[in-house]
Image (tube, rainbow, N blue to C red; front, side, top):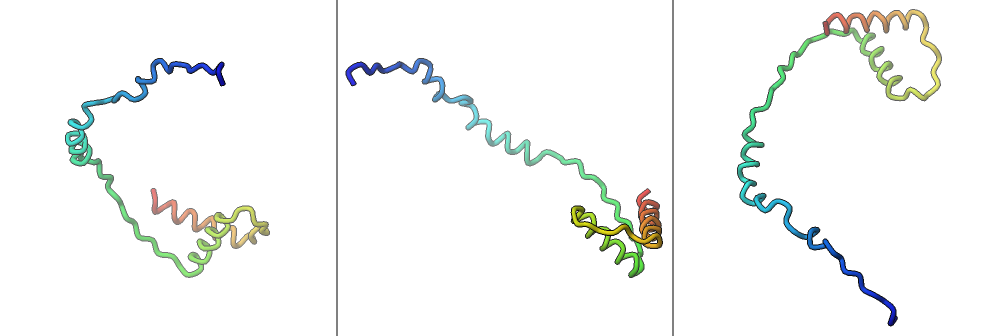
Length: 96
């Protein structure tokens, strides 16, 4: 290939120069600041709820339905629908 010409990569030395030479000296301070930083601890409030075995069964079925929404299911009977609504109201009352 006698006609092959090399092209000079002007500016390629910029790719290999250190971007932050002070990183090595800053590392200890940066790590110390990150580790010793006081974190805002959010207070956790625990609430106790009592459920009947029937309510737990309803909750399990509701979780199963929410977990697999694509499965075809028949509409719940009216009494079960009312039980689910009562359970929702019970949980909402405790959370408020």
